[in-house]
Length: 145
Image (cartoon, rainbow, N blue to C red; front, top):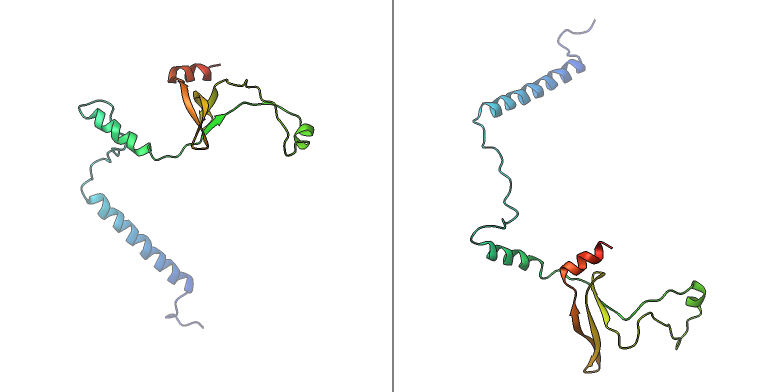
């Protein structure tokens, strides 16, 4: 015959579980009895565009992006060739481009045309002198095509 003082292991686990549940309920009751905190306000992340300090705010926003690197590309021209012709290219091969000699070169920033210019040589290095800047409205018009 089993001793009546010996507890069933399942009963002990239930008692522990009930104690944890009771503690959680008491914690919730305490939290609900405290005065409510004011409703969370949205973070002031974005600066407003109006107001007296709009100019200084815009300058601060501009300062945040000035150090972001972009890819600047000067494109001499383009062409399409077959893989057969591509594999036949060797040292000294000439590839004909669609641009004419003396024609302005395209200046692209992250793949978007922003200007045109002419090639110059300064201290034995190539450069480009900008001759025409593409306005934002012209860029938008080209995107619509």
